[in-house]
Amino acid sequence: MTHVQESTKTSVPESTGTGVRGSTLLRHLAVGVVAVVVVLLLSTVLDPYRNLQLTNVAYLVCAAAGLSVLTGLSGQISLGQGALMAVGAYVTALLLQDGGWPLPLVLIIAVVVTALVGVLVGAAAARLRGPYLAGATLAFAIGLPALADYRGLASTLGGQNGLVVLSPAPPEWLAEVSFDRWQLGISTIAAAITLVLLGNLVHSRFGRCWRAVRDDEVAAQLAGLPVARLQIVAFVVSAACAGLGGALLAFVNGLAAPGAFPLTLSLQLLAAVVLGGLGTLPGAVYGSFLLVFLPTWSASLATRLDLSRDIYANLPLAVYGAVLVLVMLAFPSGVQGGISRLIRRIR
Amino acid sequence: MLRFLNLTLGGIGTGVVYAAVALALVLIWRSTRIVNFAQGGMMMISTFVAWSVIDWTGSYWLGLAAALFAGLILGAVVERLVIRPVENAPPLNAVIVTLGLLVFLQAMAGMIWGGEPRSFPPAFGIVGFKLGDTRLLFSPSDLFAVLAVMVVMVLLGLVFQRTAIGLQMRAAAFAPEIARVLGVRVGRTLTLGWALAAVVGALAGVLVAPGSFVSPNAFDAILVFGFTAAVLGGLDSPAGAVVGGLILGLLLSYLAGYAGSDVVTLGALAILVSVLLIRPNGLFAGSRGRQI
Image (cartoon, one colour):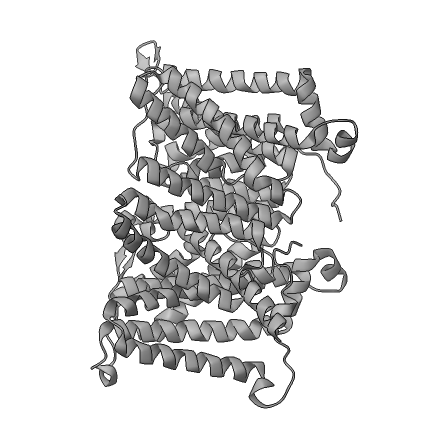
């Protein structure tokens, strides 16, 4: 129905040729493995604070990439990604409370549960368009965190204070690895797996069908595509990504609380993918870097210019807002769209 | 019985505010086919302006006037600067722009007024009227809110139905091309429409502020309630928005009274989703063909 980008097709590399370049899966796997190795090597020289920042980037990448695929490819907007992250975080917190569960299994269960919530939301969302969908997911983002306070659930979910997450320590054969590097490793591997899987999905039948639905829903329906089912699948995929992001957030920060998932989080994710370029996975990565490093830059700028706390605490938000407005007005294909255009011109 | 009466009165008191927010959204939707998600932010800014004026002068009425004036200017500026370029773009672009504006306005308010919630004075007393020897949960301030919103609605109705500019605004919304050919300055009427909608939003902000405090994101939930009310009434009809606001106010008041106030936002979500799925054109809409 709607397409925000000028053209997505041009940003998709042609998958012709031979060898590694020929197989999309192999190429993406290779890039993913290299990226993980580079980050893990980097983590040995960076200080713990930088490692924590990279860890934050990694879990935001999971959620942002899912949103980028949903909005950029399937043409559905969701302001509920923050609330879906909360679902993943709370599932993780509840499972880790008992202890004994292996971390990968916990993460997988968190993803599955969030995906199931995504089925519910997606089934409703598939019947809504544009502003209606935005409004409904907005209500979801504001309504869901309030559940933590609900009388029947407050004792399980910990109310406003949330749940403390007992982050599992690294296994014995990794005993000499510091905790921040262990968290970074897990988060990076999870983000890489997410990106590789999404990358393949984008190039698959599903990706092509989503683009067809986004560009012209009626034409897609006439061509025999099951529009509603495709939109639900897109929602479930993005919910699963958000669930993984939330699960990692809980694992890294050691806390799952309603205050960690305000509406602003959902809007920040949207700003990240809009800036990076809707529908592009590298764009989701730049956007997530911006979300993590902008507050740091703004704080250091503020100390240099001697600004008050109110100013620098809100500076990142002002930038996200301005980014959303200006990118939409001036260059709707985002940073990645600009880079793709530049590469094409050089070629 | 008294409890039911109190919940009903409380529902009407909050319902008129939701109706005003819904009306602001509907006015903009009718003229530009955009749902103004920045409405919550614009309300919040004009309410903060009122708070500052009341803080300096001590006069509630000067504050209210300042809020309405701030809303008027803000609505016009927003339309000219950021909405005009996306008016004919795909709907998703406008959604993202208004959301960006919401975030931007919240950040600006945080920079100017800080993040801590400020208490806002009510217009009149907040002690309920007496019925016999029981106190009702309906105070002079609630009565003022109901009357103020009703006056605004009547005034808006008069402007739209009885004045030349109102006729031009309806024409511009109904058929912009033909209106333009007939000499209506369509761009100018759209700016005016946004300004009027922002004034209604500003009024709603000042009326709701005493109960909810004022802070940069205090009105997020009010925006959701206003959107729900507008959808209940069908997004296209100002009268529907008013009725939708009252229905929503009553439903949420009963929900809060009988099931607990924690579930109010979830209740609004449930109402919104069921209306969207069952009667997407609102409770009062006739059937309409699907446009291809």
